[in-house]
Length: 195
Image (cartoon, rainbow, N blue to C red; front, side, top):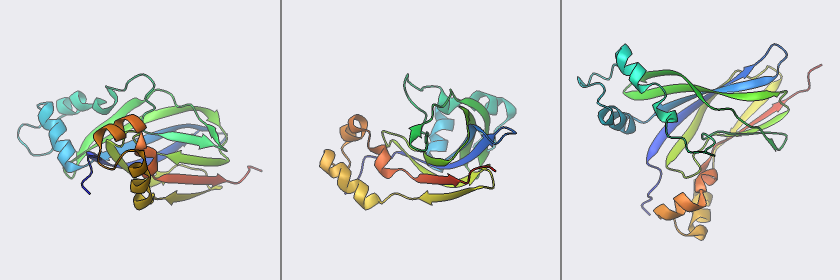
């Protein structure tokens, strides 16, 4: 069955930021967009007119934070973190980097977190509307006492669930029901207590 979603494909890397006491203080999020979407963004913004897929300093400055511009009130930024079942509140994003790599736009931003000592984290990077499919490919920055496991979604089960909600490929279903969670990668982090 042809599906209306996703429209954009993004590889995600997460680097957890900590203070000297081992408290989690933020997450650096790297998004690497698919080459087709990257080309569309450049064309829409009139960047890279020579088509060499290399951005000048001026073009990088014009592109910096482009993917953070249109966040509506209440949009949580495609990153959801729970510590021992309690949802962590993430601060507003700050764009820190943009470049081109292999024909793909790669952006980086930081989301601050109220300092917390991680015990059992559940982290899901996903777009609730599933307009973009986010694939978690790399995790770094966690203390050595933490073990990580990435659980990939069962897409057949996700499709079956969406079908019960109104139908795979139905644009309105994705927008209204917010089905992205069913297709989300899940990072599980278990940290031993500090001695």
